[in-house]
Length: 390
Image (cartoon, rainbow, N blue to C red; front, side):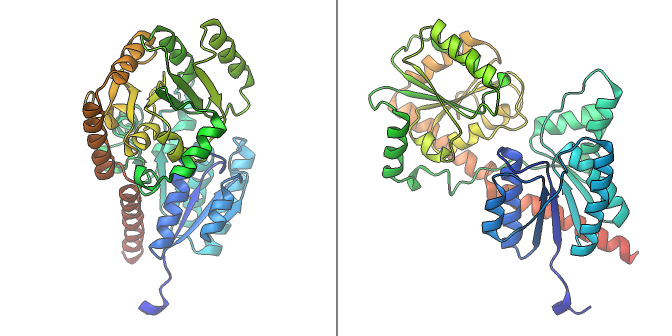
């Protein structure tokens, strides 16, 4: 085959669905980077609202029930994926979640192409061997991509994966989108009116879906204990069907007398604008975040951030320099951090904002994440080529 006849590498990413979330957004960002590099991206999922974004990019999406944990469906999906690999002449298959990974691994073995995984979270190990075995497929990629140093250590300690088979690639922030200079005032005014955000009080925001481990309840306890009472706190995120938890939070808001302080708003597709309405962004997760994009996104916008001192936040926040760290599940400590942040002088805020923006751009940008991921794909493609030659 001559150079002019060589096809561009084809990369197949597989994930359960394309609804919302960091895994889904990362999939789209890598697909876009592959397209820009002249490679051919394909995405397989069970569908969802973000498929339209792939369509806009001109990236092929194949609907398949890869979200299913049924062993028979997993086996059938492996056959479907193997057929797709052969039809599209796929070079690398990249699995981003456990159920799809089982099908993807079998398809890779059937077709002889490299199998890569991204370990997005510290999965619950559970008391049963079956659970551990189910999780283990994510540690069987060659290589395995870890989204933070916290996850890298988790993989090594719990699955015995040697360090040389792991590639540390932090999730990335789109610094073109999350740039305070690029958010137009009319967008801020429109969102402020929609959410009825007051102009004359500090605004604190806790972004994240309404689920217990995201720490909304801890945040409420902290707000009840702060010295600064004249503020507005926004809980930004969908309950995704967790109506019971939403009602529980609403009752707690009333019980603590925070009706005029806390406001729950649903899913927001303009988070860069939401951050501009905010003085302080909080990540109060009681379980460690694998990486946690909320913190570096807010930092990229020059916001003051408070995060819990475990998981990915310990890598994105330098305490006292690019934000503040507090013990998880500790409302007293969170209240003190809020008071400290709200009492900062303009000079102190500006210094922390500058430190945060510079660090996100140098260490946690989307461009860097995409570049490192494409390097992994190149490594896999070149390695497979060398094996065939041998």
